[in-house]
Image 1 (cartoon, rainbow, N blue to C red):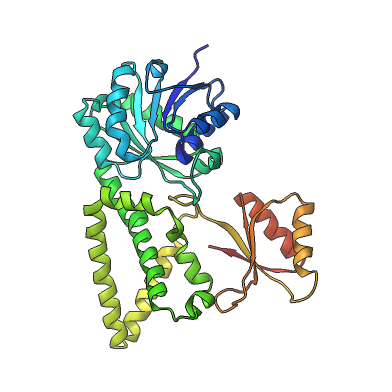
Image 2 (image 1 turned 90 degrees about the vertical axis):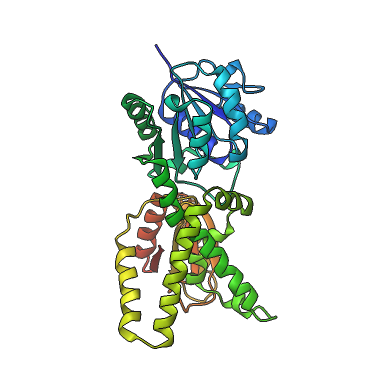
Amino acid sequence: MYCLSCGFIGLGLIGGSIARALKENIPGVRITAYDINAETLRLALSDGIVDSAAPAIDESFSDCDYIFLCAPVKRNDGNLAAVKEIMKPECLLTDVGSVKAGIHEAVHEAGLDGRFIGGHPMAGSERVGFVNSKASLLENAYYILTPTAAVSEKQVEDYRALVLKMRAIPLILDYKKHDYVTAAVSHLPHIIASSLVNLVHDSDSEDGIMKMVAAGGFKDITRIASSQAVMWQQICLSNTSNISALLADYIRVLSAFKEDLDTKKETALYDRFEDARLYRDSFINVSSGPIKRSHSISVDIADKTGALAHIVTLLAEHELSIKNIGITHNRESEDGVLKMEFYEENSMAEAVTLLKEEAYTVTVCI
C-alpha cells in the first residue's frame, strides 16, 4: 500500500501545525523534517509527528511527494538551491509564507516553475514555535494556493485535495492578487493597530490614565499589535508596494473622515459608521488570519464573595477548559466584568449555554 511522504524544511508554528494536521487526518503519512533547532526535531520525534529527522537538506527528502518550505523567508533562496538537488521529478514544492512575490521570483530563477505551488495558511497565534503547534490551527482557516502557470491542473487539484484533508479551506489565487489582498486584510491592519497603540502611548499622561482605562473596544482592535515585531518588519519589507499603496488610500479616507468631523457633517458621519457596520456584519465568521479569532465571552457577575468561584466550578464540572480569565473593571464598552477565553469554539458555545441556564448575562466577544 502506497503511503504519502511529506518533507518539512523548518518546523515552527505553521510547519508543525501542518505536519500535525497531516498525521491526524492521513493514515500512514510519513514525515521527514529538518530544522536548525535540534530540540524542535527531538520534540517532533517524541510526539510522533516526525518519522525521520534529517541532519541537513539532503537525500533524506528524495522520496517526498511534497516538500514544505517553512523556514523564515530570508532563508528560502539557499533552501531552494539545496532542495532542487535532491527532490524527485514528481515532487511538488510549496511554502507557507504570507507574501508570495519573492518566493515565486526565486522559484522562477531556480527553474522550478513546473514543480511549485505557493501556499499560505491564513492561521496563526501570538505564540510561536513547534511547541505551540496544533492540528486544529488550520481548521476552517483559508489556505491560499498560488500555482505557477507551469504546473498542471492535476497538480493543483491534488494539492487542493490535500488541503481539504487538513480540514482547511483551499482558495486558489494568482500570487500578485494574493499579495494585494493580504496587504489589505492582514498587513495594513497590523500597521494601523500598532500605530494606534503608539499614538496612545505617546499621548498618555505620566500617570498612564489612558492605559488604565483602555476598555474592550480599544483592546479588541489593537490585539494584533501583540504580534512578533520581527515578523511584521519582514512582511512590510517584502510586500512594500502593496502595503504602501493601500496605506496611502487609508490616509486619504482618514483625511476625508477628519474633514467631515471638523465641519460637523452629521449625515456623512452617520453614513460612514453605518456603511462600515453593515459591511462588517456581512463577514463570514470563521477562524482565519495570522492570529486566529479569540473564542471569548464576557459574563456579568455580582460583586459578592464566591461569584467567580461558582462560574469556574460550573465550567470545570462540565470539563470545559478555560484558556484565559480576567476581570474587566471598566464597564463602559462591554456589559460583562468577567472575560473568559476558550481553546475551541465548541467549548465556548457550551459555556454560553450553561451560563445562560444559570441566568447569567453572557456576551460573545466578536
